[in-house]
Image 1 (cartoon, rainbow over the protein chains, first blue to last red):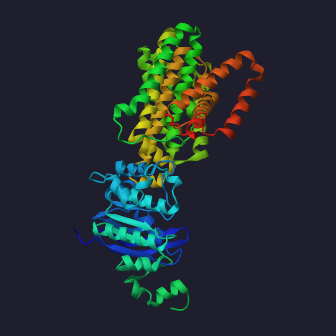
Image 2: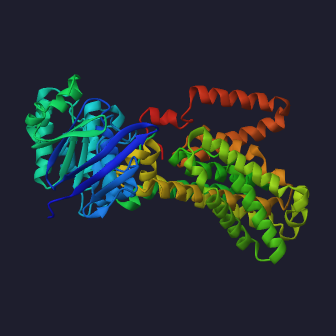
Amino acid sequence: MSSELLRLERVNKRFGGHVVLADVSFAVAPGEILGLVGPNGSGKTTTINVISGLYRADSGRITFDGHPVHHVPMHKLAHLGINRTFQVPKTFRDMTVRQNIEVAAHFGHAGAPVDIDSILRDIDLHKHAGKTAGSLTVNQQKLLDLGRALATGPKLLLVDEIGAGLNPAELGGIADLLRKLSQRGIALIVVEHLMAFLGSITSRVIVLGAGRMLFEGSLDAASHHPEVVAAFFGGEV
Amino acid sequence: MPELTPAATASPLRRARPAILVLAVLLAAFALLPHVYGNLSLLFTLMAFITLAQGLNLLYGFTGYLPFGYVGFFGCGAYAASLLVLHTGWPMLVCVGIGGVAAVAMALILGPLLRLSGAYFSIASLAASQILYFVVSNTNLADVTGGPYGLKIERVFSPTGSYYTMLAILLAATALAAWLRLSAFGMGLQAMKQDPVSAAMAGVPVVRMRLLAWLISAAVAGLCGAAYAWNISVFYPDAVFTLQISVFAIVFALFGGVGTVIGPIVGAVILYSLYSAIGISTPQYFQLIYGVLIVLLVLFLPGGVLSLFARRGIRVF
């Protein structure tokens, strides 16, 4: 196992004249959980969108497993082992929970047979397997997104605000699940506003502010970093 | 929307049973009807419209792309087959097959239209079919296409031959719809119809599969048009390029219910029979009755008549 699964090098993205990502560079190791934090509009979700192929970076380089992937279409990234969840869940609403996962299991090229039942148990939806996805709560749909991502046999999982709107018990369950996934060797990039949750699962966070990387290190250290404090609360640096 | 495929636990043969049943009923009905009902031409046109509604369903029902210009492929098949038989004298069945190939080639050329979606796609495909019509009917091309004077292939005229050819095409189109209903390919299409971004992230090759559905749908219309040209054997360009053909195919498919196998069949049988009955009994009220019917349908039954069953939890194939 190489020590580096994903590397971003000087990735830039702008929408019109608005710079969303400016020279973002970082790397992720297999099995690592990396937190991505920053105020609204700082480029967290855009970073995930660029890595997962939903957007193309304007410049810069993204390497995954040693291959350049910044021009690879989404479905091929899924085959390579990059997958994600969505901030606003995007399930196949008229299909059942099980069918949602079956689609990913069939088309995801996981490499090994996919155990749909064990995924359903992992995301705690095995009792709802026959329900249509559209009838689930938003939180359950986020978990279904995660389950669908797992069915493609990912090496890197991008998790976008899965904790928002959960109660502490549910958050604890998700934290356990994410830790379990990382123990299987899956690298995770977790975008989250809930710092306690993030602190419980990550050893390293990256703080973004207006598309620039302000800080890289432990969450604890981040909260004392003057630039980070300024980005969140305003004021002079 | 009705349920999708049953759990994968059922054996393939068991799962294919409804498909075999539908195909057997269609085959029996249209093989026996000519012996009890004399108007072969009406039966032929009914089959043509079921086929077109089913072909449209293959694209619209499974990908959500509604081609107003669907008739373009129909006309393309009609002209390609007729010109080929005029110039080469090859057996008409071969020419019908190549008519289907011509429609697929046209669909490949028009493939970039799939970059559009929603109403933009529908309107652009409509424009494309009009371009085809104006090119084919252009007086300056009269030496090549017959221009506005149309084509005559009366020397291969064969009501029976074209009838059974159309029946075979109808069965093939229905089998294709059943395949989409039962296969993983069809499940992938349904997934990308509901959310193309998630489908891509689930590993579904969205662009390639959508193009494939478009080509299959075009092939059905092309074959149908070719068999239609064989059946009428003398035709003007507007007979095979009239927008009414698109409209009928769309209305019939929607009336029955798209995304199912039997929806377009039920819709075309009911509405075309009604169309023929009103057209004969009270032709002066035809457009009024038909128009009111479509308005009521859109307002109260947007999922088609079969959604009445689906709403009560009955799985419609």
